[in-house]
Length: 230
Image 1: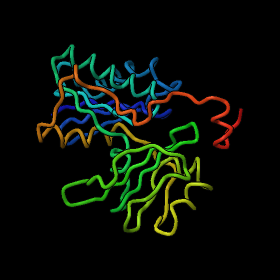
Image 2: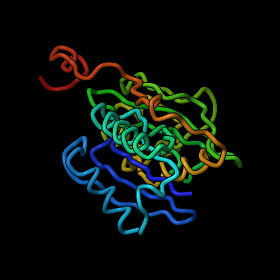
Image 3: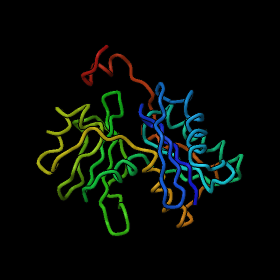
Image 4: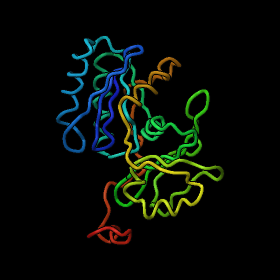
C-alpha cells in the first residue's frame, strides 16, 4: 500500500508518503496556497523514498475546512495526479486529522478560520479509532460550544488566536488546551491508510473540498463588528 498525502489547508503545508508501515513527511514552504512548491516537494518526496508516481495506490488530501485557496490546491493536485494515474483519491477532513494528533481521549478541535471565526469539531477516541461527536462547523469565538456532556481537551490554533474570548466561552468543561498544532500530511496519510484498507475510495472526478464556510472575505463593517481592524 503506497499512499501520497497532500495537506495545504494552512500556511504550514506538508506532503507525506505512506509506504506499507513506513511514513515519510516533508514540509511545503512558500506563500499561503503553496502553489509554487507543492509539486516539487511531491517529486522530491517520492525520489527520496525511491517510489515512482505509477507505483502509488491512491492520493489522499486534506479536504478541509481550511484556507480556501489551499483546499482547492490540494484537491486539484490530487485530482490531477489520480486521473493521470488511473487511481482513486481519499479525502480526509482536516479537523479529524488534527484530532488524530492529540493523545487525549475527548478532543475538541478548534482551528483559526481567520475573519474572527473558528472551525471546530469534537471527536472521542475509541478502540476502533476516532468517533465524530460534533460535526465540523464555523462560528465566532463567543458562539463556539462544547458537546453537551463531558470534559474536553482543546486542540488547535484557535486557542492561540482567540484564547481570551474562546476559553471563557467554553467554560469549566474545557480540561485544557494546546493552541499550536496544525494538520499534518502524515496524519492525513495514516487516516487514509485505514480507509484504503476498508475500501473507502473515491473517483477523483467526484472529489471536492469541505469548505464549511461559504464566505471568502468580510466587509470593513463586519470586521469592525467582530473586533477586527479596518
